[in-house]
Length: 86
Image (cartoon, rainbow, N blue to C red; front, top):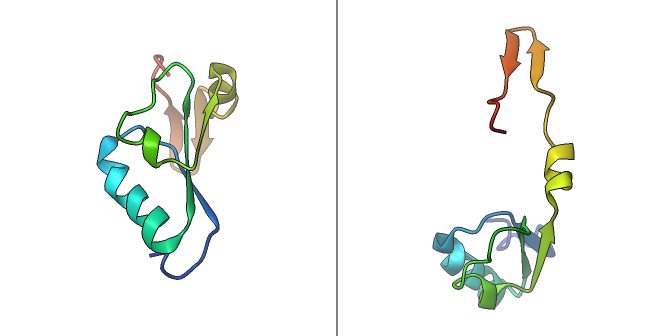
């Protein structure tokens, strides 16, 4: 466990899954680490995660679009396409 080994100062969770509430709580309380939440601005932060976060940041759709691979990628195994809805 990276928190136990003191391998980071701040963790950023890119998820809104409330199942992560207990791990976030443990990392903050047992190891004194900051844990932030990062999510798309159109998604409301989970009510279970919000009070546990050291900080909350959001990103715009434009940032998500800039971070995606092109529509098609070719490598040694062939050409791959992402779904149109992405």
